[in-house]
Image 1: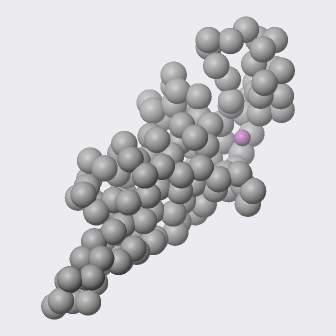
Image 2: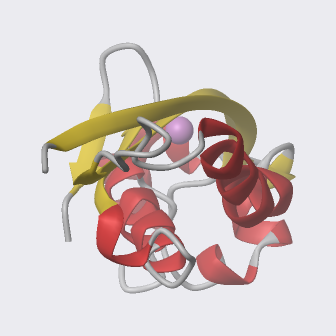
Image 3: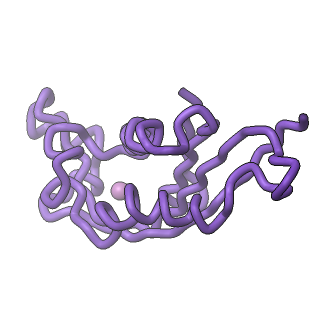
Length: 136
Ligand code: NI
């Protein structure tokens, strides 16, 4: 049996406001600067979901990429694409939607799907240069 990594890349757009209720308005402004803008700002996110499993000898696949795509669509894109993360999603009502927190939340969602034990990494590009990833 050969274990292989398989990556599915997706794109979504969302807006957010970086703000911590644990900090004063002045501290929020100082730490998050423009990202603390009261009415938020947007990003074009790139999400990479990596699974790791044995190749099925009958199919030559570790998971059908159509299935992987559908899982990501159902659990991440449908709920979060074109949303204001702080205002429109339960997950980020009280969790600051930094790129770090977002990978943790997305991992927590995907690990409960049929990907489960094959989930290896969730990587999120907030911009070309700002990237977070989590491996459980
Ligand atoms: Ni931002």
